[in-house]
Image (cartoon, rainbow, N blue to C red):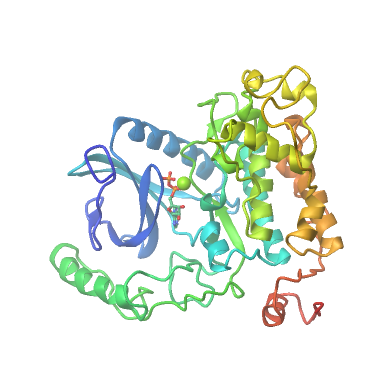
Length: 429
Ligand code: ADP
Ligand code: MG
């Protein structure tokens, strides 16, 4: 994709916006962009630089995203709504064309990496609760105050956010928001590379960039990138508003990433804010178990991915009411007039609380409480799903006591409970 119309190739120490931003290292990438950590010499802080592909449709999408991000920032002067903040934007011309660039507040790793570093085991429920609260605060603001639907909520689009201002010192803090080890050698390898190149280029082109050890974070030493998530402050923010839309002006019919897609989207029955609530429930399950809730497969067996997806939803949630099943523009492809799937006739029902106990070894109490939280969000009737505002009041989120499930080992349990005064909880076995 590094060709005309595609991504812009960035090298460490490249300069943007007339030398204001200096590229440090790649943070991530998506279908539309690459995202780089950059140093802002004007404010002496770190930012994330999202550099869009240059073809016309990507420019259009970036303009739209800037529009959405500006609305978000305008209404959130205290930056407390758990949505990423846009700082600046500009155009950058490179060999592959003209790229729109968004300067965003610098956040930490995304939740998919967090799940990965936790070896797909599922996080302690206290952490799942904390993440859920942040996502809901963000969604409540987005839905109720701005009238915007995100339409692409998934773990990759939720980023950790350190309690310590990450823009000031992203690498040295004990609760670094960054889990990922920089590429190259672990022991400050990438920082020394930056240091070298930065020094040369900075001397040449930029007036004064502080290279004092410590003052620029990463220069001193690489962070302690644990493969262990115990010490991480669990605050996060929602990012990636490239597909977001105002509810009264839907952009596309097919929205959401497959696994997080709501049934009404598959059936083409129209959608609203509640599609985000469906995805939110899928994310909460994934955080708690380490597994994706719905992983439909298609092809080869006489049915398509969509039908398999619907079947899996029903195996977990019970049969879809006939009225809903047959109401979408696409319904006839999957359902007969009785509201039964056309090609997948035999469903193996496995209700959520049982699944949590049988496969994920949740205690009965944890399983039933967590299911009570999730199931209303997974209602086939979109209008019955609770809003983010309503969901924030759910007792599960405000549950003080944490009962770690049995997948957590003894040593991590103590650490998990550190934040909870001196309360020590013994786990079974
Ligand atoms: P795309 O629209 O191309 O999917 P995203 O906005 O989702 O782009 O960004 C791609 C990836 O870049 C994210 O999954 C994340 O890992 C990283 N990223 C995005 N924004 C930030 C940020 N503000 N701070 C740190 N990393 C970020
Ligand atoms: Mg993305």
